[in-house]
Image (cartoon, rainbow, N blue to C red; front, side, top):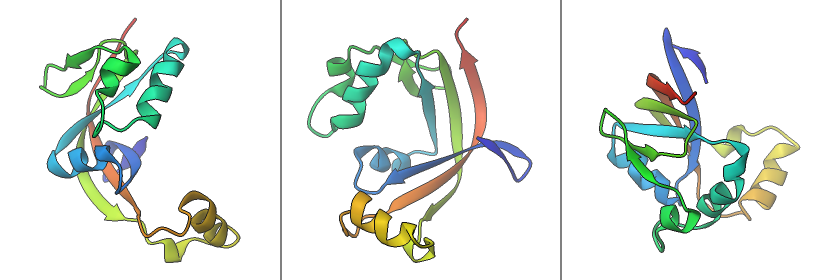
Length: 130
């Protein structure tokens, strides 16, 4: 999080092979949800299962929540940030510096052609549970 173009902003990076990427391409706004430590196992499920093949919200034991703006989040989240996309760009791995260039391409990508997309988004609402 930070400021760019005089707006409070988030900077997220999503690999183009992820199911989440399709949602970000289709919609102008999205939420970022933050959880307490007790939800670590639920988040592990969400991070390792694809929503293409299973209802990972159900598998994780989380409860869907619609924000007043009509966006999806989770009842269990301690903080919800609503974001509106301002800028999207594919990362150019030719710009990686050594020794990261060869290590990242080999270790993280197994030399596959998929890429991360960078989304810069304006923060439009924040909800924090007390």
